[in-house]
Image (cartoon, rainbow, N blue to C red):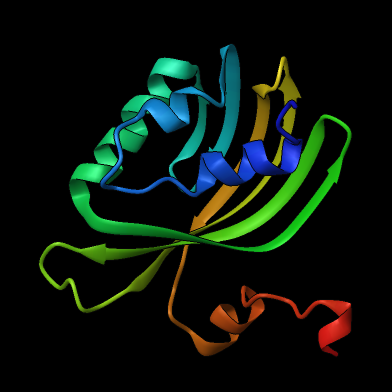
Length: 141
C-alpha cells in the first residue's frame, strides 16, 4: 500500500533530532525543488540543501517539535500550516516557538516533489501564539 500525501508531508515536518536523516530521505524525491520565501529572502533548495538545513537544525537544538494547525490534502497535493517548537541545548526545560510555516506540496512517485513554502519567525505574543493553536475538530465543538 502506498503512503498517502498527508502521511508523507507529516513525516517530512515531524522528524526527530535523535534520528538519522534516513526517515527524511525516504520522503524526498531525487528531483525535489523547494521554493522557500523566508524572513531572510527567497531560497530554492534541492534534496541535498534540504538535508543540510535539517542537519544544521539538529545540531542547534536539543529537540524540535512540529505542531500542525491546518492540513488540506487532495490527491497528490497538500497545503499545511504549522509551527516548529524547539528546546535549546542551553535550556532543555524550556520549549519555545521558533518559526511558523505555510506550504503547498506536490508529491510524485510517493515522495515530496515540488514545494512552495513561506515562513516567518515566531514571537511569543499571546495573540500570535493563539492564532497558531490547533483548531478543534468539528466533533470537539
